[in-house]
Length: 173
Image 1 (tube, rainbow, N blue to C red):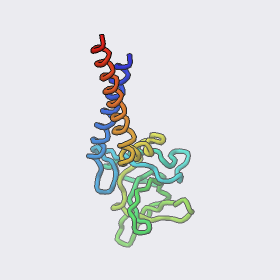
Image 2 (cartoon, rainbow, N blue to C red):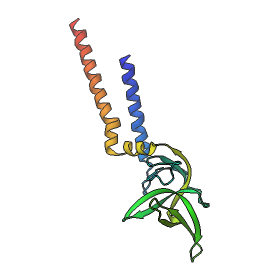
Image 3 (spheres, helix red, strand yellow):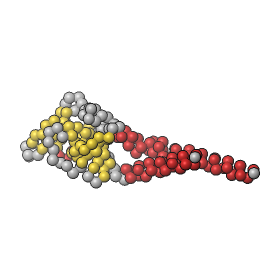
Image 4 (spheres, rainbow, N blue to C red):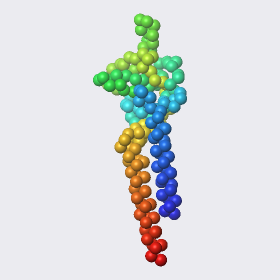
């Protein structure tokens, strides 16, 4: 019974480690996880509450660039010199002097942020509640140690001690 539990836990740890490796290999230079036409992005604000909240994971279609007002998009923006990925709803679409689309998005503080097509990563497909927090933790160095490496070491030590005790018992008979 104990051996089955240990084996199951090892299989789970190995599956998580393989999952982390696969996810890590699909992170783009913008910092998003992308599989083909779908990207995974953690929501950074509560601006679209109740549809999404901070920490949710949104799946976006990176090929759909036909946008209308009220579409939800994920996009890249600069804030205080840092590149940030946001998910928000288009409030208005206008044209600039060169006839390019300008998308207006309401920010949490009530101001309007304007972006163009080059900033848009894709359009919203679905939300997975709170999975963004979990993925970010598991993909961090601390998360990898806490979720895979540390439990594997503890299980290995437990298995080694159990095995050693079994050997000692069998020798004493």
